[in-house]
Image (cartoon, rainbow, N blue to C red; front, side, top):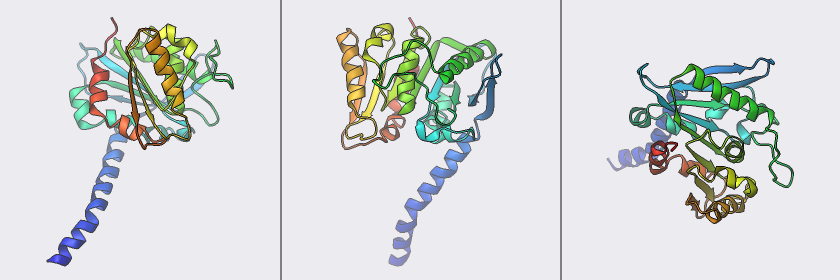
Length: 256
């Protein structure tokens, strides 16, 4: 009996891991494969999740921006981190939504900052395509335009701040994770509810980026959320997107 108990304890973590993996695969299969084309022939791969809905209702739109490691052309890698938390059975039941998760081509960025992290007036090609995709989604799907949310991790965290600065009246709330932006742009989107996340010992994107944006927002007279995880490096998004309090907060936000 003791041997059986020992074996069970040894394989139980593996069972949990396999269950988690199969669950993630099942969730990713809920996202359809899509590709947006504009009139110039430029395109952007994305995945789309639309929960069961009533044609007479409107639904929040969640825009998810992945990090640098998920760039490519497979239209799959962008689902690796974070976005599947929004697609859990619990969240789809509590918060029926439209979710779009675009994928950056290799070597491209969401944001358009200078080498000194200063905001450039013109958007990157992919940010321009993303805005067009959002507009197209609003046009063709039952989107509640008072509840459009944007979030992203790492490179997508920078993209989140970039999108806020360029389209400050589009979003009802934002959750940038281990990202950063240009503090001079804060005045344009200080009215948008924001919850910032970062790891305290992040060596890939220094937490100073998030701290500076938080301080700039506070100095502008608003009260953003800021969570810095102690003893956590660049993978702060694991805890951030697993935080049900954050998700509940996000879905409560509406444009005034």
